[in-house]
Structures are given as structure tokens and as C-alpha cells.
Image 1 (cartoon, helix red, strand yellow):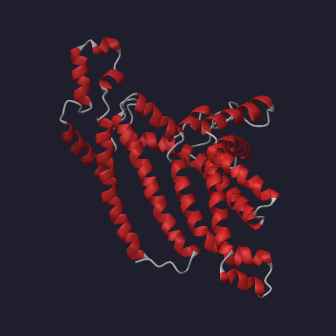
Image 2 (cartoon, rainbow, N blue to C red):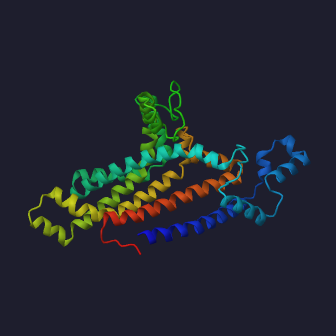
Image 3 (cartoon, rainbow, N blue to C red):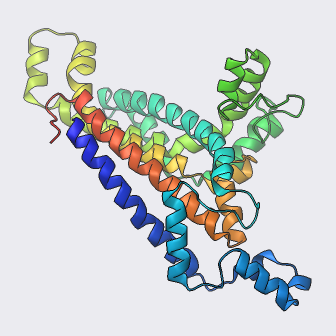
Length: 337
């Protein structure tokens, strides 16, 4: 396993360089000029200001020179300076990513718990009424647009019923915690602030459920189909013939073999959530990576765009590696070479 992990880490290095090149070229292929997006009309009429802006950000150099300069800085851990915020992109990502990580974690926890539970119930109660209901729930979760679901949930639970907090990460009456990890719930626990923890957790509920609905639907359908296939195997019939209880047959013998495809769905779903859901973050005024990427694209902020792409790519690569390693824990037959 150690050799396998070492090879994957070496492969990650070259893969990230390829991703940086692809993203850099695609970003610069957009038929727009960052000068027009970042300078006022008065400055645009001043040729010296335009030339100074291009020289400051290296836009006066050929594209291949711009990339090699960027790659050299990247290998030193420097993602460049954001044209929009005038701060290092790395600092911006550290500021925005914890909000997305916290929200994505809540979303995937919701999706995993209810997705596997609904899938198990649906498989055990095949073709019964509860099966039809849960299959309908999974279809709804996969089909509903996230922005429409977000607006509906805010209207019903916040505006009409008043049982859920409004947009944002915290209520206006609550001050943000000391920046320890950037995760408000965890920082509140570390500082012993119970009120802050409950407020932050309440603000995570609606957007977390909204983001987790799609993945929950996929997990439900995948769990159901794979569990039904496993339950038809000979060794399951043998276990039942030996007199084992149905709960033991499902939990100890069937579920483990049915979970490998589910782990893949969970990994891909978590990667999608970590990429930042722009529309959902916009509706809930959530200051995450999705909002940062959207604002960077609006201003043709090439360093920020490439930085976000590298972060999202690294998330997917790391999650895929962890997913592959989890296969061996769930199924002892899996071997790493």
C-alpha cells in the first residue's frame, strides 16, 4: 500500500502541472481583456495607466512567458496576486475555503446518513409502498435544481415559518469567533462558545440540506440497486438458511459488499461540493469558494481563476486517493500494487 500511495503522490505532482497549464491556457483563451474589467473608464483613456497595469501583472509579455513565470512561482508555493482583491491568491483561498469545507461537510454527512438509510430500507422493502416513496424522494433530490430548492427552503422555513435562520454564516447579533480553523462550528467548540456553535450550526442546516439533496438521491439509488444485487447472491441465501436474523444478514454480510460503488458516489459527491456551488452560495449569501470563483471570472482575474481550479483539482485528486484506499477497508479482497 505504501508503494501504491507513493506512486500516486508522484503522479499527482505531474497531474497538477498539467492542470495548471490547461487552466491557464483556457483562461487566457477567453476573448476579453482584464484591463477592461479592472480599470475605470478614466484610466482606460490614459495610455500610461493601461501600460503600467499590463506591466504590473505581466500582461505585456507573450503568453508562454506568462505561464513559465506563473509555473516558477507555483513551484515555490506562490499562486500570484489577485487582480481584484490585490491580495495573494493563497491568502484568499485560505479565507474562503473553510466556509465551503464546512458547508460541504454538513451536506455530505446529511447525504451519506439518509442516502444509505433510505437505500437500505428501499431494498429490504422492495416494491412496497415505502419503497415507492423513497425512490420518489431520491428522484426529486436528483432532479430539483439547487437554486430553486434553496429559494424554496428559504421562503418556507425562514420567511413563512420562521423556524430557520436567514442567509449568511452567522446572525447579526453574534460575533465571528477567533480565526483558528476558519470553521465557525469547530472554532466555537474550541473556544467554548455554545451560543456561537448553535447559531453557526443553525445557519448550516438549510444550505447543507440543499447541497446534500442531489448526492443523497444518488447514494439512495446506488445503495438500493447494489444491495438488491447482493441479496440475490448464493452466500446470502446460505446465511438465511443457517437461521441468521435478517438484520444480521443485511448489516454483516450484504451491506459491506454493496458499499464499494456507494463509496465512489460519496467521494465524487464530496468533491463536487468542495468545488463550491455558486448558485446555492449566492442564495444563502455564503462566502465560499463558489462566490470567490464567480467574482474572479467576472473580473477576468486570471491568477484567482487558476488558483481556484488548482484547489478544486487537488480536492478531487486527494478524495479519489482516499476513496481508493477505503476500498481495501470495506473489502478485504482488494489488493494494492
